[in-house]
Length: 483
Image (cartoon, rainbow, N blue to C red; front, side):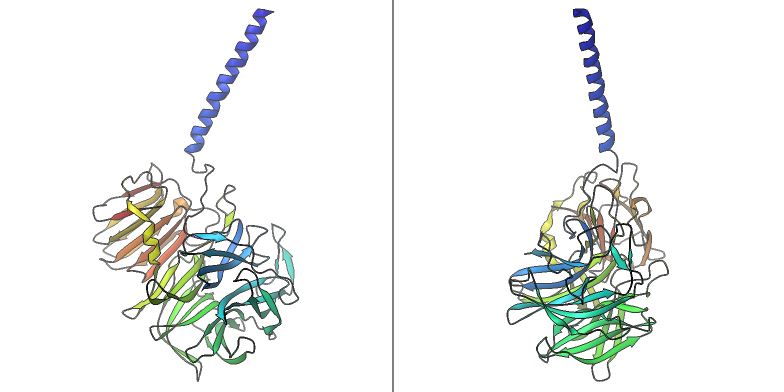
């Protein structure tokens, strides 16, 4: 009997040892697998706590705090059931999640609280947003109700006021601007003019053929009268998320025209710089351009505030970086915001560039290019042909950057770091001159590239293969570690 017990104990011990070895081998393989259970959540690009995020809304600096509201579906990682999510910050880089600020709860917004803006008046924070009623509803794969026809909704422009510092809002009904038959006007941006009255701009479409901007005016934010509209057949079918502001005595219109991009990625974000004639409502365009070269940034919004430390006005822009699905089953968020950028005009060129506060996150030069944590900030000047691979594994597969000085083309190729939720192009070619300044910010799973201090930019998501950087010439490249 004792001999049998010893054999049983020995067998159990052997099984135990084999099991432990198996676990160690499995863990070692898992740690070296790109699908290893790790967070791909960026550190400085805002993401929702979970589920879906899209357009930034109501950006403002109010009572000493930055407020970021955003289109949010708290029920699933897909578009639909739109609420206003809310986050606050003291530096625009580190954000605190707040309770949902807006929910659909009346006959005018019963199917969603779409995009809008915020403005302070008499010490209170006022917001304006588009409430929608769908004409026909269908259910998607998450059993979320969405409109059957993308244009099949009735929009109302709703005014709401906060009594608690921007954390909750009381809606003023009926809406400030009631729906007009067959009209798809949306996304009100409200601001105070130099003349002292308030102006609202709304995106619209002309018979689903041309985009247009509608202008309304008010003396008190309550009663609004129609001023006029500007339309054009040069920029897509319909315009979303318009933002109109004065910068260095130039008028700037930021908007997201549907159908103005490529056949594969038709919806883009643009700017127009020039002068608006408010007598005839004609925009005299002096320059125009994409706000991002990758077609993944959309629906940007700006806000203006006086920076006491810098003793100057600042115009800040944040845009949405699109994702159609989460990265994988380990990461339950879908969508992120760009790095906050400051807007300025230099030598007549409209530019957007990461806020100066981000420079404080640099913690010296990155010495080990094989253990970067995919958190770094690169700066250099193009002096010759170059090749660079980021987010790379040890076999040097990753995201490829190449500059061809003969054709003056910067190529960004992310075919090896793609994932199902990628919405933009896999390969992008940007025409830039030799001696151009390049800045590259990597933040775990997102990359933003800025050319000539923000003359052009390119923002997109990445599914990393590893944490390595490879370059054929790092002599004149400054690579800073970010913490």
